[in-house]
Every structure is written in structure tokens, then in C-alpha cells.
Length: 301
Image 1 (cartoon, rainbow, N blue to C red):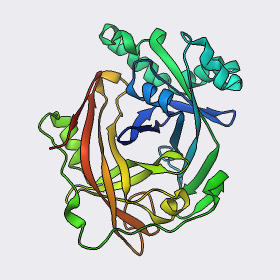
Image 2 (image 1 turned 60 degrees about the vertical axis):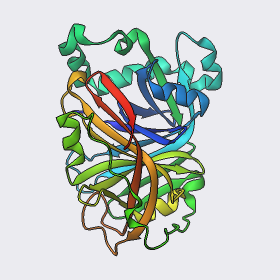
Image 3 (image 1 turned 135 degrees about the vertical axis):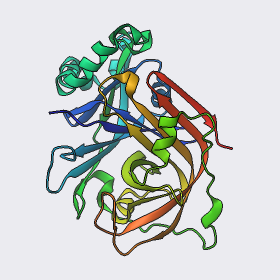
Image 4 (image 1 turned 135 degrees about the horizontal axis):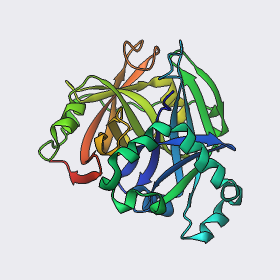
């Protein structure tokens, strides 16, 4: 059985930054590893809060797959910086167990690393990895039909602010000139994506449904209300294809910018929600793309 990837949302200077991670949950925390040189590590050191979206049963044929979102204080554990452990001594004491669990849950990914062999850059090798630990200070669990449970400040649902009428065409199309064919293809498919949002509790990530025709994204309306998401506000939309276990074969695109609420439907007719959805338009300001070991960001045109 192949473990499903999670999504980690961190706060950058221009809004949420949401990427795919291999992670596990234990001791009321989410654990993942990344390169010490990864951009999100610097972001987390400056703003130590993050959100983790975990799909439970989505890839295992469950009748009603579930999602969980955890938002909370975050610690980067780096063996080269032993004082990091003081931020979360409990996490530091069981870090070895967490690393072992990640390895066991993602054995297929470890095999993919072996397949890539010498092509793996030094920054991707085990000696250059750090642990990212997100405490479950606030947590939501839901399926396609209902919100199942909530803890922390997610308990109270708040109204979603609507954008003024007549602003539908404020979004900017992402600049595709520097994208590879595989990256461009991700933006052309009507299908699932992950939306990063700013909330008063910290950055959060939720499942969404992308419409390439209008370059809009649909998100569960009740979920947004529980999050207390800042809308209109800054957001990210992430597309990723990680079916192949080799890191050199993974590809993805993240759009970041301003988003507005265009409206909502009486019932979600596609995507991960059977309930009403909010229709969001994004005014893309920055495009980040990765293909194998290469990644780059550029301002949208």
C-alpha cells in the first residue's frame, strides 16, 4: 500500500506557500522531512506556524474519504543546530521514531531515490535533511458530506466576506512561457488542486477544484467558514503530479496572488465536496514550478 502525500502550508512574505510533503502523524504532531536549503525552511524560521492537509483513505478506496487539517506552532529540527530542540523538547526526544515511521510509510519513495542514484543532488541526500514538526493546536476533520469534528479555535464558523459585484475579471493568467510541457498540462486540466489560505491562526491548506476555462477554483463553503479564512486576501493554488516514486519524475506548479470570492453554488457538483462551494478567482502574482530536482519562481506577467 502506497502512502498518500500531505500538503504543508507555510507563510511567505507574499502569502501562503503550499507544497507536497511525505509525512506522518504521531504525538499530536505532523512530521515531515525536507532539504535544509528548501525555501520553506527559511520561511518557517521567520514565521514558525504552518498548516498540514492530510487525505485519509482518499487513495485506499474508502466509501467516504476524509481529510484532516492541522494548524499550529512549528519547529524545524536540524542536527546541525542542536538549539532548535529547545523549541519543542518533546518532539526532539522522539524525532528518531518519527524519521523511522516516515521511512516505513514511504518505502516506495525510498526505492525511487535508489533508482535515481547518483542523479540526486547533495541537498536532497539524508545528511542535508531536516525535520519539520507541526503541533496540532487547531484541527478540523471532514468528508465530502459534513464537518466531522473540530478542536481549538476552529470551533466557531464565521461568515465569508463577498467581493463587490463586477470584479470577476480581476484575475491575471499565470505566465506559462517558462513552464515545461508537463507543467503547463497541470494547469489545463479540470480537476483537483490544493488551495493555501491565510487565517488568523496561521496558514492553512484545503482541497479545491480547478476550472481552467475561467481560471477559478471551488472550495467547500462551510470549510472556509470554520477556518475564518481572510477573503478577499492572499492565497496559493498548487497542482502536483507525484505518481512516480522517483523524485526526478515529479512535477508541479504553484500559483500565488490575491483572491476574491465570486459567489457560491447551492451544492458542489464536482470535486471533493458534496455541499455548497465558494468560487474563488486568483490574481496570479508569482508562479513557482518544479520538475524533478529543478525548481524556479517568477513574477506573473
